[in-house]
Image (cartoon, rainbow, N blue to C red; front, side):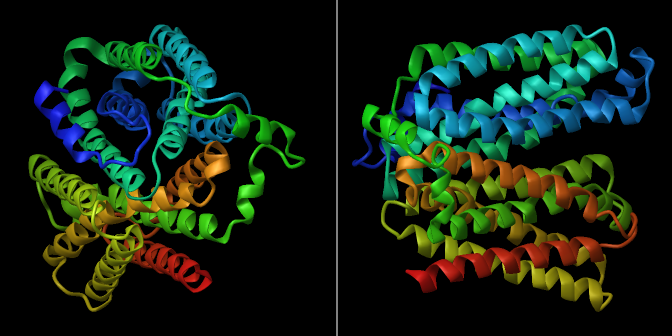
Length: 406
């Protein structure tokens, strides 16, 4: 990040946060980008990996599955642990082990070792994702937290677009091992940044309270109606995006007939819309209630999903589908950061555990949704429409339940 962009971030952060500096926010954003870089960067190398490792496409695919399972499990491990012992030590240990696992993955002589290394990589890399959210919750509340999470969503929106593009450009020159060494470099840079920038943010009294609690560290947070409602709203809104990402190659290329470059351009345009709306949400968070922004975003997502369902059921021209898809993806910028702030703000004394549940549900639903949108084959968007509409309905319902409770 340049000095100019750092200054912009400094001006963007509102007063009322406690030590959440632009430099720290950049480091936490880098940690949150591990998942998209760890998954998307090497996708284009799968055919080469199959040949060079003398294995099957299914086995190579398992290296991706193992990474995602590791992320889900790791968040449930490191989140509650950070509530009991503090944020910095688990974060640094996780980063160091993740560096070692990344090196083993790049050097793996067999697909079995690759799969095992990728699981450990995801398991320990999850520490940065889950503890990063908890650190923001420790240091900022209300509008400041909402703005910080929205700024992090900008990185989350850019990484899934940049990673496949960079990977496809590099794989022919450096191979799949070179791609995994790039991942190693990103993880190593994150580890150094953690050691230099991050400091303990979880106060001793809160750590003591978590250790002395009769319930497992922080799991009493699950009893909070607000936490559950906002978490479900976040996770099912994210499921809308995962449904779109999983089905987009078939919708754009097979059904509409776009070329690969045209598909990349359209996919990139939607990502730009998400990033732009996340930036707008970060700005609006200073003056507008977080709930209002989430409400508007969820209603736009629901309207777009219903429009997609109507277009598909009525047999309208498939060329119209990119319009509501753009609206749905862009509107997520109003939801994801603000819903995260509201969910973790509901459990301030168990932010690590709350962040763990938030992340595990996010990736669990993502793993469930991805295959569902392809059940009808490559030539129909009906499963996509049904999954997106159903997810949007659940997200809105969860949000409204919290409103009634309040």
